[in-house]
Image 1 (cartoon, rainbow, N blue to C red):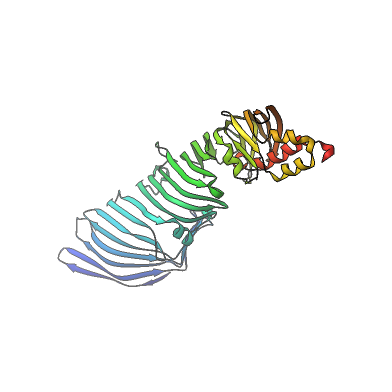
Image 2: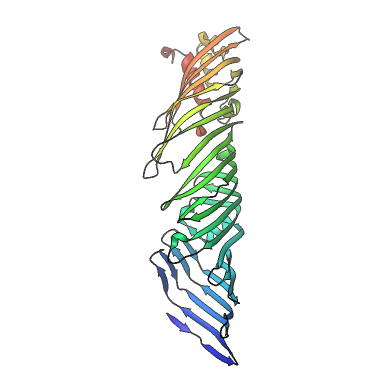
Length: 432
């Protein structure tokens, strides 16, 4: 460690003034094995004065500047060019410390300490920080999949009680607000995410306070497939890890809504939830695939019992057993000017009536039994019953639609599957 500077003592009657000329301390590395914290090339500069009077608390006014090449904690985070400039004031047994903390020129927060010397109150807060700029500057391993393009962060941390020798007695509060955050998490795009929650620290554990946090997202996935996601959030620390409970989770999709009463993250060994499907618009669902010549009008609702499990590698498995979907009312299926159907009609004249039945099928029943195995293959055992007034003919179809996309939220191939299954159903094997 290198030291440079001096201290001057000035005596005046019963008072001694300690004048601190610039004192500078520097070293190549500071590290703390208990916290795995490392500070590269730190330097400390101190100036000011301390007034000492017998039988009275000292009074002081100090300027403390500290900077380092980087601050790291294992691979958890790295703060390059961390620096702070603090003003330290003391009078009548009280102390006040205040100043900003920066990474290079980017503000990260403000430190405030005040109160009696033996019972100070500390807070560290940041106001409307640009999330994209912060994560570009500060490297946080847990947030590496997040690529924000806009949004702000406001936070406040307050240390209420601090005991260096008995950490279990420490208590703290914190609040976090994310406002209109947009960007990508890995390959999943999202926009206008907002979140607010308050936390407490007691018995060496963090947890959400009694008022549940609220998370909302305006849209997610390509072409805003999911919109208006909303859920209550409860966070709890268990030993060295955290669990997050989502309650009253709902998301709008294809003109309808999906909802789950509760979901625990991480998923763990096996977790059973029921996904409620409410009035999904079939026209939007089918048109998302832009399949020419197939139109389905109407809405469906139902329930999907889902089992979710996650192994130690983080791989997630999703099963659906005995789920069901059913139309909410009468609807229409129109298969017309579809290239595949038109080709078959010209080649198989004896099937013309069967194909024409699909040109204006006014159904009164459209239902499906839903199952999905651990490979992600979903099977829809589908029944369609209705009537075509143009040819005065009843229509009854039983179809098995299957695909291997993991989950209903990505099941946008129904139009393509319907086209193929209807064609296969109407054309005899020997004529293919």
